[in-house]
Length: 250
Ligand code: BTN
Image 1: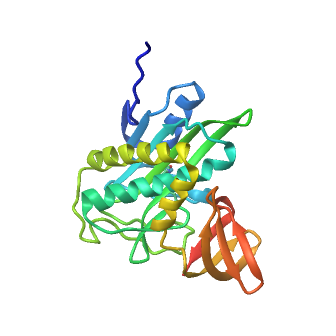
Image 2: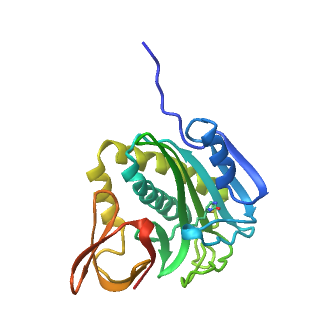
């Protein structure tokens, strides 16, 4: 009989004092066929990347990490891994720092409307399958650097009066929780989306969404099975996928 066990995420963890972006070494390893789980963490990044080609300022005092994932999901479901990351980091911050965070669709973590954490996932698809996803998370722990090209207000765990846990502690909790949420995502997509819906503070709110095709206002009505957002506007229901949206504002 073959012995199987779940390899937890975060083996190995590569630590860098300073790097352009933690996404880079993980992407290199992914392309070389390294198995799921390898994680890079840096004290600071000199060219940290945010979503949609924004910069992510990464001075010392934050958690900057990227993890290699190889979930058995369809390319159309990659966005949902971002949702899983948001839930996992939400779990970690609530459990370890003792502050309540809101998930703003798709995957920003906010406290009182100010951004505490962002996620970026970069992936590659091969023959209709997901080859790899490099999921990156940036958490403001002690400082709250401004996010360039983004109108969002920012905050940090320190500013919110949260417990200043060690970064490895927050990272370990996040990786364990991420494994759990991705497990649910792979087994039962409906159950996964339901648990995301229950935690997404955007739902039911009147919001303004800007995308490449303009700006519109409406009420966030639902998150669909592949992770897109349905918005009720004066002219009907519109669907947005996370990749198409520039900003979502109250
Ligand atoms: C966003 O909200 O725009 C996403 C920010 C993601 C930042 C993290 S920090 C670790 C990883 N490395 C990067 O260069 N970006 C991600």
